[in-house]
Length: 441
Image (cartoon, rainbow, N blue to C red; front, side):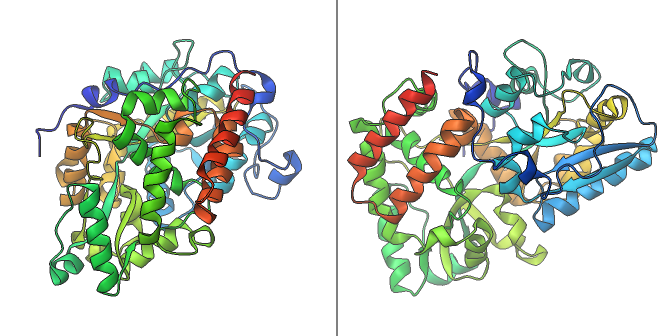
């Protein structure tokens, strides 16, 4: 594997599209209204927004609803409480629900600090004035390259985001299963297809897959588009600069249609966790997912988990571009406990907090270069090398495009394709027509 590059080189290759000029009705759709949020728990414990400071507490809205990341976050918050004496009221909501309701949440009475993502979606809400300026917090942070600062910066040049972790998407498998059957890592799409046919003959589901929540299929689209059309086309397509109803996008879906028979059936009724468990239980041979898939594996199974980057399709493009999203934290525009919110964000961006994550979560990579990453598992080290050796890195489809387009157009379109992949041309025409309406708003 090529020598790993630095985080600065990694992030310098991220070129997410601009969000300048978005109008009010272009905000993320899909929430049922502010009243629907009251039942989610997102607003629990939150009073009137303002710039005052509560000396004893701060509220935190979390999308870390799965057991492992929820536990890791609890340990990070415990470290903050011990160091600061400030109590953190964590309001945890199902990950997908959190994402779908984020716009109403931020326009209502959000928690002081909340989990979110780098890229287009961070800048979208910063540009709308729905997030707090964290430039002063960044002035007290260390262990981040200029590139990480760039990934946390809005269109106005101010910082609105504190990075915590990042992770590559790749094809994961269990080494013991592959060793038992004598499987080898495929280097081409034809080899991948042949491997899938062999797995079927051996009684395995070749590729575990679940898209009940809508977003996992975006990863498959991303990697096929990157392999067939290259990084710049992918970024331009996400920015609305390229046509969906084109031969290049048609080829992506045609290729995907050829791979669908290798995937788990009934995927629209299966969560990503259930798909991961098929791999964990040795019922599936592979699963294309993010590094956090390891959270669904037991501690004594971590060493049996391995991955390979999705194989080459076009030799002229190669196989060194990938998705590697960055997760982190933002602050409400008018937090109730602003001083404590900034204090918490400073801690969350520290090497101390990153060390807690490294010690407790073998399924992610931390952004702070001051962290004790010498304790990374073999899988984490390999993942860091994969990210470092990539030529271009995307943030993930729904983070590299407008949130309203991703949520209201792409999710239902991809699920329609998975349900019935026969009329690709009609589907792409529909996406293009909706894209023109949204991107010209």
